[in-house]
Image (cartoon, rainbow, N blue to C red):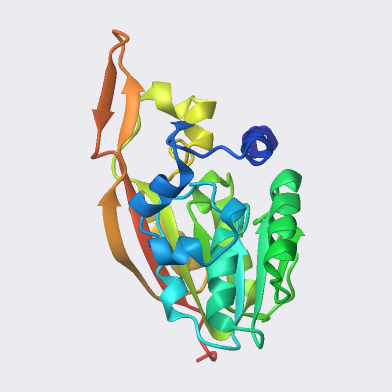
Length: 259
């Protein structure tokens, strides 16, 4: 089941990379720039990076970007065409390093091309799964991710991997989607809803508990907003609801020493 989900997600985002279209909530969102502005990016940020890096994906602009310091090492989970990696690189400078990991070969190829065109020598893109990160232990200062962990069928393993690669005292700042209530069965069983960041989401208390069980401290949600969902009821009517799924920004720290 997990492997099937991964293949569906990989296939969908491979299509997006090849077609350079934007997608969220299981349907085309229109202009990538407009969608990125809607979810929190600024026009100044979008103009500061390669144009092709913005596919209009995600559910928020990770608040991590503004907290980055020169010289830090950053890891972006599900880096896509590289939008957050390039924004991070602008913050950490040439003394820092940014690693993007994505399981879709087409996305990695597109991101590498964007890095070459933008002369981002400190940015590296690696093909890999977020449940098995191709990154050394204790290497990273901060892990960021934008609406990707909800796509993983093994979120517990993802959080353990984040903990492994962070330096002691390192932090994560993530944008993601979580469930506020049970989804209708039509959405639970929908591949389109899964690749649209909905059906793979888990309930908010479970999400936070998994982070704490992975060993993180000071875990907290810093921002929460409704994430509108469209679905068809038993009579075939389309409904839009805002109380089933939320977009959250969540952060936490790897303890700097064992007590």
